Amino acid sequence: MDMDQNRPKTPYKKYNKTGKPKFEPSPLRKKAMALASQYGMEEAIALQIAAGTLPLEMWQKKQIEKKSKQEMYKKLQEKIAAFSLQNSLSLETSLQVLRGAFSLKEYRDQKISKMEKNKEAQEFAAQSNIPLHIAKMILDKKFTLEEYFAKQEQKKERDQKAQEIKKQYPDLALSTCYMIVDNKINVEEFIKNKDQNREKRKEWYKNYLKEHQEENQPLANYLQKLKTKKIAIFLSRLGHESLSGIVIGYSPYEIKIKDKQNAIHICPKISLKFFCRLAYAERALSLMKVSPKLQKEPIPPSSNPYERYEIPDDLLKEEGKISLMLREGETFSGTIKWFTKYDIKLSLSATPKSNILIFRHAVVAAQPSEAQESE
Image (cartoon, rainbow, N blue to C red):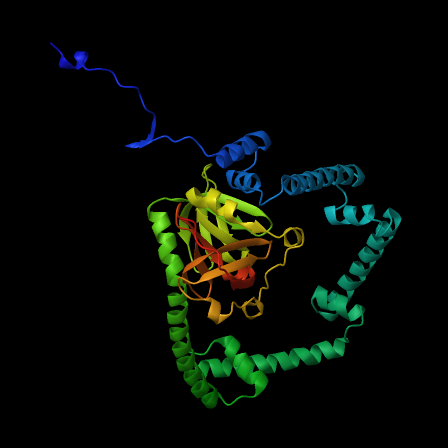
C-alpha cells in the first residue's frame, strides 16, 4: 500500500525561488506597477513617480514635448517632399527655402551663376595646367597664379628636405620630418629631447595609472559583485531619467546595463547621479527629499573636473553622517560606508538595509547630518 496516499495534504505555496515564498508587493511597488501599466513607462521611472520624487506632470510634459517634436518633424518632411519638385532640390536647400532664407527664384539664379563660374574655372584650369579647385580660388581673387606657382616651388623644396631627413633617420615619422623643416630644428637635439620626454611621460603615466586604479577600485569591486551575482540595480540619470537592469560591463568611464527587454544601455558616468540595488530602490526613494526649485531648474555638471563641487575634507570620514544635495534637487542623508575621489557609498538605513552609491560630480551641496539610521 502506498503510504503517501495516507499523508495529510498541506496547502500549496507559490515560490519565486527555491525555498523563498512569494511575498506580496509593497504599497509603493503596487503603485509603481499600476503607473507602469497605465502609462507604459519604464519600471524605474514608475518607481520615482510613485515615491513622489518625480512629478507625474513633469514626466507627462516631457512625453508631450517628445511627441510634438516627432509630429512637427513628420509634417516638415511632408512639406519638403511636396515642395522639392520631385526631389530636384536637396533636403538642406528645401529647408532653407521653407525657412525663408531665400526664394526659389534666387536659388535658381544662384545655381545658373554657379554653373557659369564653374565653366569659366574649367577653361582657366585647362589653359594654366592647374587643378580645378585652385582655378576657382584664383578667380575668386584669393591669390594670384604667380603666387600659386611660387608656393608650389616652396612646397617642392620643403618636401625634398623632409625626405632627406627621413632617409637619414628612418625611425622618424615623415610628419615629424616636416615639423623639423618648418621650425628649423636641429635634428640631433630634437631626438635627444624626444627620448628624455618619452621617459618622463612613461613615469608620469605609470604614476597616473596607479592613482587612477586605486581611486576606481572600490566602485569596480562593487560593480563586479553586482555583475557576478546578477543583482538588478536602479540607476538614476541626469534629465530626470532612470533605468533598471543588471550590470553586464563597466569601465572607469561608463557602466553597461541590460534591461528586462534585453536592451543594452551604455551609461557614461558623467550622466549618472546615483544607483542602488533594485531591492533597495523603494526604501531609498522614500527616504529621499527633493528641492522643487532645483527639480525645475537643475544645475548641469561641468565638463571640467576641476570646476565641480568639492566636498569639504572634514565631512568625508568613514562612518561619518552626511547630507548630500544633487544637481536635480535630490537630497540623501546617511552614513558614509566608503568614499573615493569619484563616488560615495552611503547607508541610508540599517533596518531595512538601504545602501546607495552617489557620484560626486552630481553633488552641488554637502553638510553634516545628525539624522540617525532607523533601527
